[in-house]
Image 1 (tube, rainbow, N blue to C red):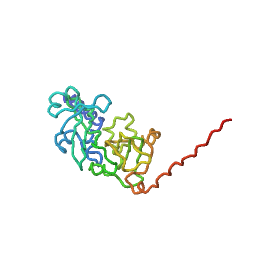
Image 2 (image 1 turned 135 degrees about the vertical axis):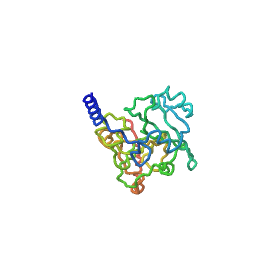
Image 3 (image 1 turned 120 degrees about the horizontal axis):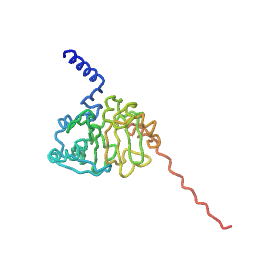
Image 4 (image 1 turned 90 degrees about the horizontal axis):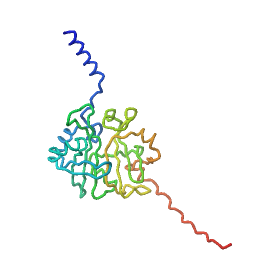
Amino acid sequence: MAQRFTSLTLLFFLFALSAPIPATAAPYFEDGFLGLTQTELRDKLGPPQAVRDRKAALRVFNYYSLADWDKYFKGLVSPQNGEDVYTYKRDGVNVRYSFSYIQDPRDQSDFPTLYVRLVDIEFSPPVPIAKVPELVPEFKPSEDPNTPAFRSNIWLLLFKGEPSPQARFIVREQAKESMDWTLAFQMFSLQGLPDPLTTQALVDRMEISAQSLQLVRQRQRLTHEPILNPFSKEFAQQAPPPKPVKKIPVPKYAD
């Protein structure tokens, strides 16, 4: 009997060694949010003012009070689909934070541990890019012109800091284990960003997430145009592009 107990203990010990190391319940980056558990986030910010869930892949949401969510909708929709919502008034602008979560795959309980994987910040009314650091204290952009930055016609993407191996835990990309994941700030404009881009262009919202610089450079070259860091002095000192030369129309003569 003692030998059997010893064998079972040894098997359990070997299994524990082979199991993945639990993600640390602490922020992975300087933003202070990504990687926190839902409990830690609520301890930091207080109870959310509302909880929302998304309809399919659209940016259409149902909003619930925290009491209604915990009492009924949490079990109906599933806990990880609920986003905690906090709204602030800063310098005359409504700033709404929404926190998306990812479930710990090792936790099979009815209400598993949730970790912050993305922060969605909305501005009403839209604000200039230059004003975003004033409205979002967690956003401290680098002034180094070589800080990785990319743009499209509707968004601006900025990387910040060093990659974090622990951040793979909150990433959904299938090949995440073969890539490095870095803090990223992505600003979106419903109106579209002008060309040439200026820091007075208006943006409606920003996402704080972990993204891969390798992925952008290797697979997304056609959709991510590299640019100078918009928060650098060098960006502001760029010469304006030459104005297009208006061509003189050539008259057409009858044969």
